[in-house]
Length: 599
Image (cartoon, rainbow, N blue to C red):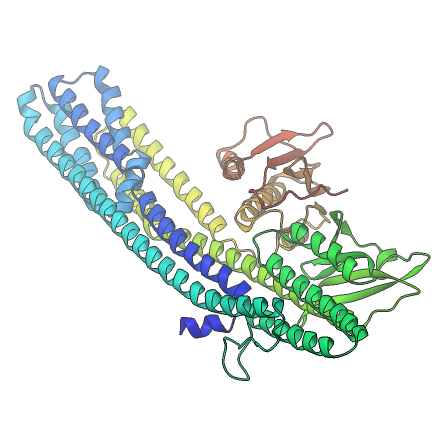
């Protein structure tokens, strides 16, 4: 089945496809192992933290009877019990019950016992039981960590074996597809060199409807050349010259299309792949000043021009809507880059007035347009697939947070409320501590709900420009004012994973302006300069308060964290004329080329 599918592709496509599949095996294995390894991050710290609880419990036992000076030790052990990283590891490993039993045992038995005991012997049994439960939790964490490591090793071993097997099959397949046809072509070429024109290349693929690969095309061209040479030897010298020139032109065109196909299916970006193609097209045709105009998100308003010398993003003005700019001794031509109903842009050129395009040259241009449209379609599909995968991953994280941490926080809030309703005889410090714990739980629960909301945010439209434009339109309706939007980034500069962070920061900043700023002018701008992307959100509202409330401070902290995820910086400061500016600077993920800055 695999062989049948591969034979329908050209060798130029088969070889990258096999290499891609081989790379996918390795990448998949490493990705799965890395993903599994992430699940045990923090286990060692959690085990150490649990171990410190045992030491602190024994220290409290040794210092009985307790005095007010030991309140700090009691608060320390309670802080360690509620350590965020320990709680996270326990939740990930499914040990909530053991962990909850330790917390309950401390609150209900051990802590009151230590406070009431006058001698170590009175609380020794309770401390021993507390330590025994901690030891059980540590042992369970250790066993689960070991099982994760064994599973990671097994997954890596399986993928290494699969990769080696696929590598051997790839080598065998390529030898069969390349070695034999090459030997036939080499034999025929030697025979032609010696003046024997009777040998003919036999196609590797059988059947009249079978697709030809490059070897078949080269073999048929060699057959044609052999037959033409035989006729030219038998006929006049003039026909020899004509056939030689014709074959040279065809071979040059075929070689050009072959190399274009190779170049378009490499990992380079179009800004790096197209200029050499356009330069060679100018050599094969009388066309001059050839340019490719690529529309941003299939919109003719914004486009990106690529020629043999440079590439830069531009905004289409009303006077530039006609294709091409006229020259005195030539007239403009244009061809659409289309794939079905999708319009990717235009191929623009200038044709001298005293020359015309032949049928072969028109066919060459048509074939080149089909290859460009196919490459653009593949790039767009890849970008959309990556964006879809990123959104699915974020939705999965949101579900996991909702099903685990949100429920745990809700349960803790209920338990804290029940504890306050019991009216236990506690001192003022303990009552204040319980009140603070309940407030912190409420704050953490509210913050978690906000995180879930941001995780579930989706890019409904393809491309960062469209997503930001949708956000600007949304908040313009909410604020009842026109938000100024200035986007000056080259197409496909910001990957989908970084674009999501930018979108979240923009939404958070606009939401803060909507809720608190009372502004009449709001601006969102993005530019690219000296290898860095800068996004600014400014307003003329009330500005930053002297002391930010906890809720507002948390929103600002989210923007700072997302800027850190971009390996960049987020600065929030008051404007001189009133209002606030949020400025984000970061460098996009490395690309196979360095885009030029927009003019």
